[in-house]
Image (cartoon, rainbow, N blue to C red; front, top):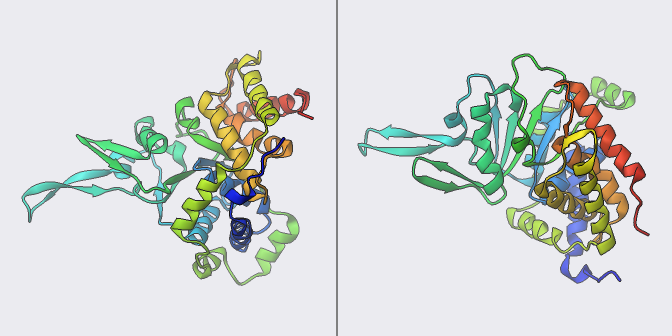
Length: 323
């Protein structure tokens, strides 16, 4: 029997979530469902990888999210010559004190946009690993904590491979979800062409709708979203099948399974419920699982991504759902 968790979750949070989705949707038109999933991952304390072609609104989404949530946002443009210290910070000589002092890098922000992350070298990419996993960085003999709401949203172009460095499995596993935005419907795209108001202007006019304390409270509330034992079994069944699939050499990790449950809870919360439906699990399964899978015979091109998506879709079709 499902326990009643309504008293643990402030009903005003559901109203606020709706306002947040609409606020971001005023800037990024026609992408309400994508916005809900990005917001879900953020509230589940997860990092996000947006993989899509240039010019579909990846950066616009992140900037609008930061503005509506009132977060400190920093953008790092990843390039081949970017160094790890360009991200984390550097010890600099202070002529006044005659000593070295640490100058924080752009990673010390609540929301970090890692733009075109696969253009930087593996050494630079790895500068994010400890930060994303433990919300801290180690420099020399210092260990420095990152902001409590620290979240990385990375972008990359899936069709361009010249001069790029594919993210290793250990880095991909640290992203709770990977999603694309896709092109606008023709009618909405036409409205953009006819409008004198540009997305950048919309972002600048957008006001914060929530405080940091409220965001922390909403993140805490995610843990009160109820998950039936049968639904947990369904999640584990999907995860287990990725580990035994004949076309895969690497399935979903334990971290991935935990992210799967956390994202399911958050998506239910953003959908206005304090309990998970099987449909919630099915809706976010490909976002959580596909980027964690490694094919037994990879081609090392964009077709690998689509094959992994097909495998997850196949598992969803063949796995019995709880009754």
